[in-house]
Image (tube, rainbow, N blue to C red):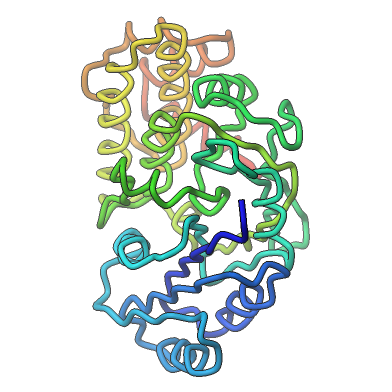
Length: 320
């Protein structure tokens, strides 16, 4: 592979205090054949002017100014105009290491790879650093996507963030892997759609992405109606998609993953209704518990959602 163009899509909204660090980290890459797409999502602060300044200084920077439509809509706008052979997402309040693109492309060569998975550092406000890393995969390992999914789920290391991966642009467009507009946790919804569509996945054991954990982030928000509706939408669609998976072993693993996330999200957002993903019930959920701990948690949630929510809120502590 000879120096392919990489499109880096950066959605921008109300991040003027972080934007310079983010964009500079992309512009200063050791790999220079880049197209940086800054998507101003109707930001009301000084971000649009900052983006225009970057576009005026560096010909690799392309600007989109649009009405506010949310993160999904901003990423989709970037996908539609991307000229690169590969696409990388970077959120505008985060930043990447100087050799990120070079390292992610280093093992691609001529292999038919759809997705390159990397490692992220999550930087807490108190200075702690946690890693989103696949501890049971080897650096440079290429796996058929079903094998990658199963290995990741077994280790509870199937990570949702879209920015953790480098994607073949043709793969995204052919499979219409666009984000659902107006949905919270859009990366979680996209996760199985992406990897079930992929053929081969390459893992690079390098922490290239720096995710800054902030208290105002969506995943740190409290229960509200939009949270609830988004969780329901994602779980219902997961069930529908997983039902169509022909490989029974993979389908069973995906149902387990759905159950695990259903338990986490129900506790985190205090969903006290007796809600089951569409097409499931209590028996279905219990049958797909793959360990005793998950079985007990599921029993508690089924018996008393309010009790489960209370216990979760008392015991939940932020962990790496």
